[in-house]
Structure formats: structure tokens, C-alpha cells
Amino acid sequence: MIDPKENIITQDGRAYTPDRFHSMAILFTLSLAFLLLYSCKDPIVIDDNIIKIPAKNDTLNMNGIKPLKFGNVWKYLYKKYDSKGTLLTSGIVVDSVRKDTIIDKSRWFITSMRDTVWQSNFPDGLRMSKIGSVPVIEWLEAKYPGLPGFTWQVESSQRNINIIDTLISVTAGSFMCYYYGDITNTPKGWEYSNIYYSAKVGLIKRETYVDETADVKYLSYSLELIDFTIK
Image (cartoon, rainbow, N blue to C red; front, side, top):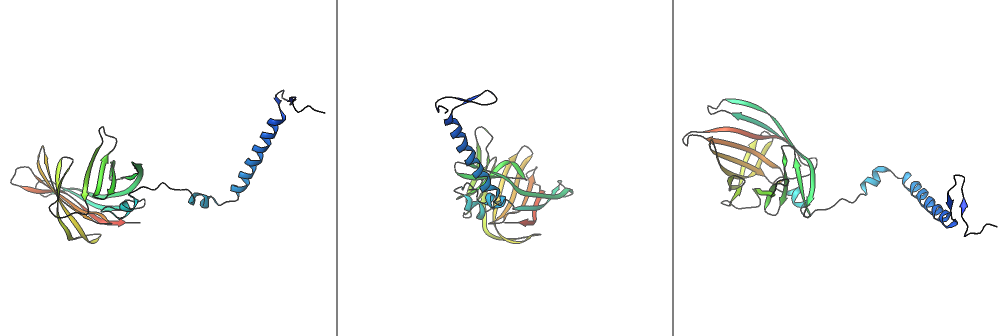
């Protein structure tokens, strides 16, 4: 009879006690049960059961002045002009939601057109942040909801709400928009921008005028929505 307190010597010379054999048998049984259970499941079903981390502004991001959600894509026609009104360059610019992160329980997104700036919808509107900067730089990009006359600072420019219900027609269709006015003092002179956002659609149109002589103001570039996909 084998004394249960004695060691059992295996062929490789290692010693195991019966208690250790018992523990290994239990571990082997549990592992086998786990493999049998999940080998019979459809991987898609398992993936669908993953609990996604909710954020406190998810609803705002889906219904904000710029709806931020994976699968949303905006296509714009971009044009740039010189001071004489000659078209210098033009092309299609695509903006799509690329990735997200959660900071202080709020979700932020990176899009392809501004891939160095995080974007997120909050109760006061669309906010942007250069999170990698020290200190963190954050600003209100588009006040929503808001009233005409509201004015605030956007990086190096001053922005205000001109109208909250202006109808703008572009290639992608006609949209009821918030019309924002923007003034920036640059080394070359003043820049004036007309910016149009439509709730639950995003940026519809932007026109930037340059005033280099304080007398002659010309259209420097424009951005116009030509197609979009909102999930």
C-alpha cells in the first residue's frame, strides 16, 4: 500500500503528492469543460455579448450638431482661390469617424479631416480638444443649442451665432442651419468665415474671406457638402 503522505516519483524524476494530482485533475476537468462549452458557440454570438463601455454623452454624440458615430462619413468639395478670384485648387475631401476614447466618462472621437483633434458633443455644443497638448487645449467649436448674438472665443478667433434657422442649399441637399460668423486676425490680415452646421448632419458649408488691405476682401476657400452617410 502506498502511504498518501509519501511522494510519488514520476518517470522524469519529479515528485508529486496525491494532493497535487487531485488539484491538477480538477484544473484539467474545468479546462476541458470550458473548451467544450465555447467550441460549440458561434463566435459572432460571443462577440455580440461583449459589454461595451457606455459614456454619459453617447446620446448627445448621436444627435448633436455633428453626429459622431462609427460609420458616419461626409464628403466635401474643396476650392481655393487667389486674391483675383482665380481657382487655384479643388478636390474632394472625405471626413469619417476613425476612432474614439473615453475621458472623464465622456466619449471623444477622431475624424479623418482633423486627425490631431478630438471631437465630442456636450450639452453646450460641439467641442474640440488637443488632448495631447500640455496643458490640454479645449474649445467650443459650434454652440448648440444657442441664440443669435452668442459670442465666444475659438482658439485664435472670435465666433458668434448669427442665425439659428437659415436654409442653405448645397450639392448634398437643402438644410436648415445654424449660421456662425468667425473673425480671425492673422499675420496677413483679417479672415472672415461663414460657417453653417445642421443638427444631426454636421458641417454643411464654410466660406473664408481674406482682407489683406482692409479694403479688398476676397474669397480664399470654400467647403461644400456634396454627400454624406449618417448611421
